[in-house]
Length: 115
Length: 115
Image 1 (tube, chains in turn orange, red):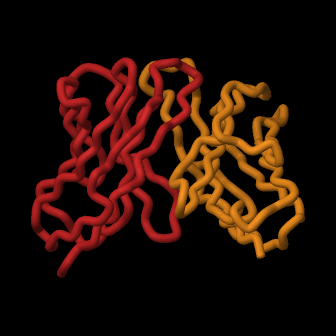
Image 2 (cartoon, one colour):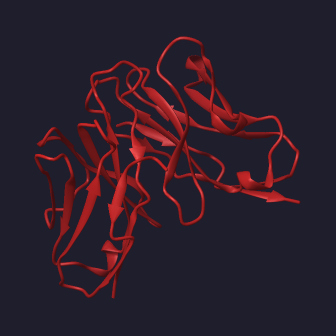
């Protein structure tokens, strides 16, 4: 158990819908990262938040957005869903600023199926 | 652009045999290097990481990896595999920027263990 929690574990929805994935980082971690794992694209970095502010952006679609709240939990919002958005979405957290500990620990993931 | 290559998509070894999983990276400077393991239906678990210092790093579950700067490689090894090692293994790199370490992953190597 990494200490990172993600809800829900599974999500099944239809095309055109909007969903919200939630992540709670490890206690004390300030950074949250979101990754998408799909069969054709592999594991890809989407976005990073650090202490409530966006820090880095990767291959995140405009239909996707994220935020990190004052209690440091994060949400990834996916809208106008398409079949190709079906994937496993991981959240990871880390505690930047400490040498050798700025390592990302991953949650169990949310499996999204778009029908 | 940064990239990580895991040349072997699938490897099968017998239980008790030695294992080496290959990883090569393309990066402007020596990045931070990681190996993660993903068991079926599970999240990503950190096996080991290289930040600096000794180029042979020890990880959990009896794994080790050797960083070779001249070959831009970070191969994962285990002297004797166990049936429980069957999983998918991912090599990843991150820039040496504290607090902004988006991971770039390889495509993964699926390990099958023959009894």
